[in-house]
Image 1: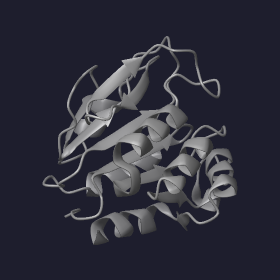
Image 2: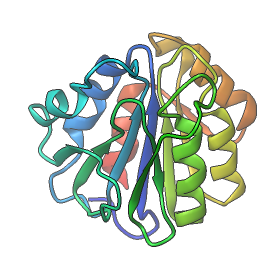
Image 3: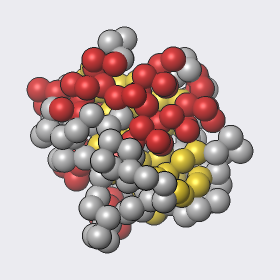
Amino acid sequence: MITGSIDAIVIGTSAGAVEALSALLPHLPGDMAVPVVIVVHVPPDKRSIMASLMASKCVMQVKEAEDKEPLLPSTIYFAPPDYHLLVEADKTLALSSDEPVSFSRPSIDVLFESAADAFGERLLAIVLTGANHDGAAGARTITDAGGTVIIQDPHTAFASTMPMSAIRTCPTAKVLSLAAIVEYLEGL
């Protein structure tokens, strides 16, 4: 069970997300003491099925995030389509329809940067497969705040651009395969 030094986990992914999250999220224990907040790039005109798809695979509660909702342990939150998802200082979630960042809304950078402000060194971020550079600047913000960043090994990613960009901005991050990320989380 994750306890002690981590108060929240944030995850960003895009192309190849279903496969990557399906390999990762079902391994998280139902009694995990921290929330998991996830941004997946979804076209703005599409209804997201990520929360319902992952709910059928996970023991943790899985839901689409709602505005002003408090973060709860043992819960996985997905950003809804066409909204940025932020973590507020009071550990609640906020939805924003501000302009896209890195051509994306929701933006991984927006989530990561707001979570770094809220949790600082007690934050763990995971950058998974994706086809653009979203998440790299946010990952750097997290390392600058003393948090931990894990990046999927680009050689094992469906789309390597996102992990490669994050590695360039966060050379001290842990670069791991999906199996090694699962092992890392189980060891916390």
